Image (cartoon, rainbow, N blue to C red; front, top):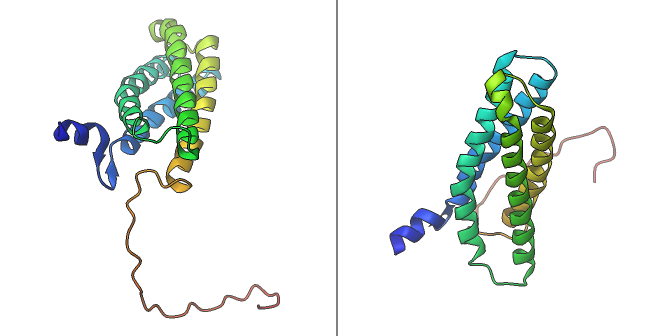
Length: 172
């Protein structure tokens, strides 16, 4: 059971969820970029095909990303500020994935004929908006709340004083 937990949640100081988010975000950002370029007439038929492939790739990688994030969410004490932020993060990301899934469905005809559909473009950009908002909340889970951060003992280090840099104004 411990091996399964390490596979899903990662190890201390090395959670499984954050590295997976990079792949998911990359695929969805690629889909949005290709959709915009293709809708504007760039890249020919490759844009429509590439948009659909990037959406499907993002949706595929979103499955393990969501499972590892959900496993972390289950460990948080309910009702505390960390839990509220994590819940909002999860809702934003699920909304984004649903929008990307709808975009992939609407972009299917673009896969066949090499165009970017209006519905595919609009829902991909809406999904990107949810992804950015959810990513901002995800960052605050780590950098504000310290989720899954290993605490280190502070070591006294004797460093030389840094030189003052003059900006032309009065030094303090």
